[in-house]
Length: 245
Image 1 (cartoon, rainbow, N blue to C red):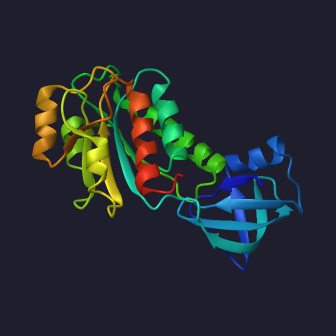
Image 2: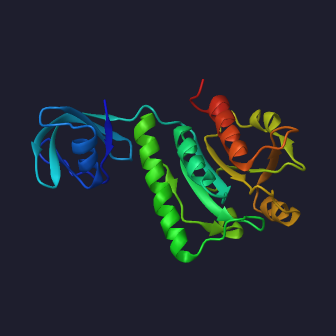
Image 3: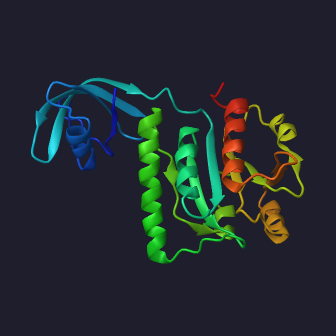
């Protein structure tokens, strides 16, 4: 059954009103009409199942027949801090990380980041990534939308995250094998992972991260592209500690 995103829903006497871009998708793309079943989700874990009962000029009214909490989201709270990637690679990463159950994505600039965005471009990109996360959540059945943070610099990024999070930073030159680190993380559910740009991190950045409690790790002898490394790390964490497999 198609799923549609409704932020901040107001349920009144079992009825919800759907507005905005989703109305166009419901009408023109899927051609749903009064009486058709529909599933709505609010991005905060609640799912509403019901039927379209009224088609208004700019909105649709849905009679809610059942409300449930999402069971398709990972028990892990993984934050992925990703140095900005070139071209459409960042779009791809946001989409796939959402499918893999990421809780938060923090784009950041490091000393070797190639994209340098003007202020107006930062807002434009941020809005685009949020839209991609919404569409990916609709497709894969998630109940919670991942948070996409505004782009920040390296130092600001290191100061974010929960104090109780396990802090990992991927570094190809030194560090602990991820296999070994995971042996100590079986009961940990909050993970803050940092992936660098295509040129990697500088030694100064790694030293700065260590002072903030980050553990340098590496995935193996092969050098992976930045987007490959991120998705590889997320997949391993979800398999070992989360809900994949």
